[in-house]
Image (cartoon, rainbow, N blue to C red; front, side, top):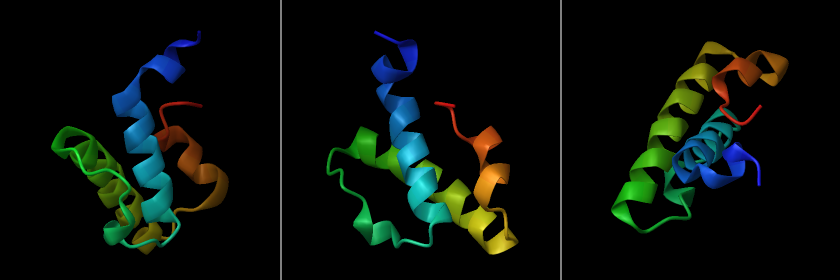
Length: 67
């Protein structure tokens, strides 16, 4: 199994980042456990900041951990 598939925190951050960069609301967080929710929201906040700054498309690849 590849390492990025085992690292849950990294995957949660990346999914939250993609949601935030895609303009989705933080209320769409699919996790209810506090630790998982915090990782997702941390990614969402970074993604949302990049969304507001106009960083989209291929320029977001360096922010994702799984690439």
